[in-house]
Length: 505
Image (tube, rainbow, N blue to C red; front, top):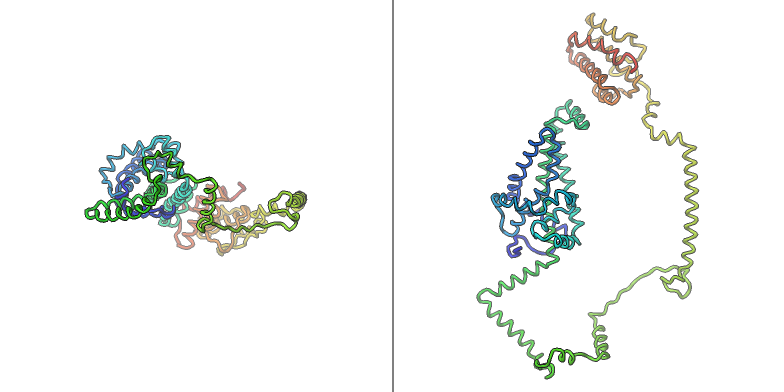
């Protein structure tokens, strides 16, 4: 890497600051990054949805699985842009075949679940090491950065999910009232329509397009920061700048002054040397022997050096000790804490006995008061027992004694006499009476016709719920909109009422 051409300040950072720098890099080069992203990834997304048109969920799953391929495109762009060589689209296209050889197969199979993927990717793609050297390199780089890289993956994954679900939720806000229940039923049952599956894939593509470049940029910046700590890039840059400054024309005077200063410092030392020390013709082994000190004198010299304030360090430690330690014993002496061992044994034995007693008492209490605690898990049954059926709903009397025995026949007779409102009212009152008394559906005066239909979705079969929906719709149209239904519709309701509400299921 040509550190002199780096477009960011190379200095040691903490891991979180380094990841924030990665996000900023993506924002700075967003035009180049997203131009390469949409030019390569979007066509691939379209092809997947065309190939798996009959099973679009497979297209979404495949798009997620192939994320390591997209990461290499983003890393190629920002890796060159960071050092002042932002690639063009043509250069990116030409580089694609080479990117497939940077461990892509391993990352799509055994290493697909690597939680530090963005941090390890530069080792595979930029360093181009052998298998053994790459393993040792990853192990070294991950010593103090893997946990932050894993947290980066977890956070970006959650943000991506929230964004994708948020886009789907935004779509559901524009669905007209009355159609959203049907859509939710399709989503829950897994029978989504084609347009919904397609929108789900598109929303996921948008979420990945927003978060994945950020994820790769943060991992790359974390990788650079770890190398800065290990290889002292910041110090290397300082020395390079010094060398470049001294190599410029006019710097010879400064160099000469530095040399003169060094000579003036070292000259007195050389003059003070003894002849034996200054004699360069003496072999190296003899020079070392001459400079050795007597062991006794060396010990005194070392002691005097260690007595200097720079080497003297005092440290105070506070340690708790028990009062019943034996007299004269020190903290940590096994004899002094023998009494503690005896006390802990007694406390452990008493605690064990109390726990066994509590267990036996708890079992007895559970058996004796089983009726009380069993009822806590069946609140619905308690509510059903305490529930009192209402006598009127929506201003209509739904008591059984106020209704004829043959509700369907009486409703048909009223319809044929031209009393359509009374006929549908009778059918609806009879249905409410059955729901409240037989089905034990808990209705009150605050419920509406729509609430009744919603509550019946889980209590009635599909055929009965469909019939009640037709009856409710015709009754509301006649009662509130004065829209008289066709004879065929009303008479079919009369004929089918006994089938759905006349007898026990």
